Figure 1: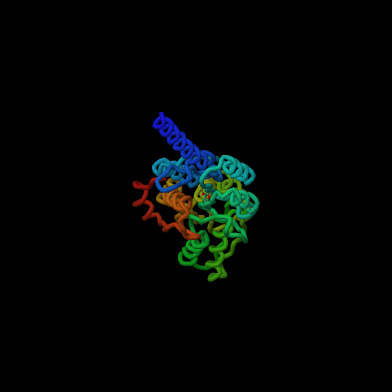
Figure 2: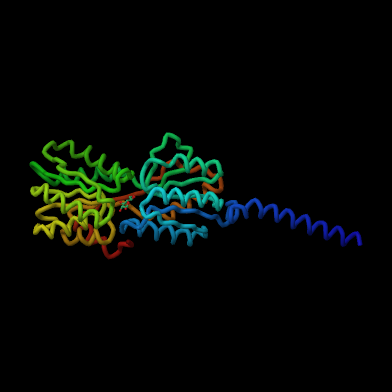
Length: 325
Ligand code: GZL
C-alpha cells in the first residue's frame, strides 16, 4: 500500500513539475527558447510593394521552416498602423521573439517599449528605426543604404562628363532606404557641381508609382539625362514612361537603380537600365540564427550588415541564369 501511495505521489509531483514547466512556456505558445527547443517568431512585414519585398518574404518564410521556427506572419500593406497592430498582437500571443522591417524610421518607441516590458526581444530586419533608445531592439540585420546611394553616385560621377540633369525617384517617404540612398548619392555627386538633381519625388517603391512620377517629371524636365531610382520597380515604371514619351531608356535617358531583382537585371542586360546597385533581400537564414541566439539569451552584434555588390549590363547577363529572385 505504502509503495502505491509513494508511486502515485511521485507521479503527481512529476506531473505538477511538468505542468509548471509547460505553464512557463505554454503562456508563450511554445517553449521558452531553451537550446534546441522550437521558438515562435512574430514577423511584421512591410507589405508586398516590390520584387525585393516578395523575395524577402519568401526568404523569411523558407528559412523559418528550415530552422524549425514557428512563424506568425503579417503583411502591413505599407501602413505603419498595421505593423504596430501586428506587433501588439504578437505581444498578446506571447511569442518568443518579434522581428519586423519598419516601414518608416520614426513612431516605434511606444510599441517597442510594450514589447520590452513583456520581455519579448525585438530584431529589426531590412529597415532601421530612428530612436534614441537602442535598448528597444536587440539587433539590426540589413543593408548599408548610405553605401548603396554612394555606389550609385560614384558610377554617375565616373561615367558621365559635363552638365548632367538628374531626376530622382525616391522610395517611401520617411523610410530608412529612401533617406539614406538619397544621402549617399548626394554626398558622392557633390564632387561634380555640373551634376544637378532637377527633381526628386517619392514613387513609394512601386512600379506604378515610378511610372506616374516619371510621367510628370518628363513633362516638367524635358531635358533630363539620368534617372536615379531608389529601387528597380520604380526604375521599371520609369522605363514605361520614357518609352511612352518616345525616348530610349538606357540611351536617351540613362537609368541607375537599386535592388538587382530579376526584372531589373533583365532590363539591365537589355540595356534599358545602365547600372544596378544590389540590395540583398535573402535575410531569412541570418534572421533565424540571430533569433535563436537572442531567445537563448546570447549576446549578438547590435548591427549585422549584409554583403552586396553592383552590376553592369555585362555582369547582369552572366548573373541572370543563376539569379534566385
Ligand atoms: C531595402 C528595402 C526596399 C527595397 C525596395 O532594404 O527596404 O524596400 O529597396 C523595397 O524594393 O520595397
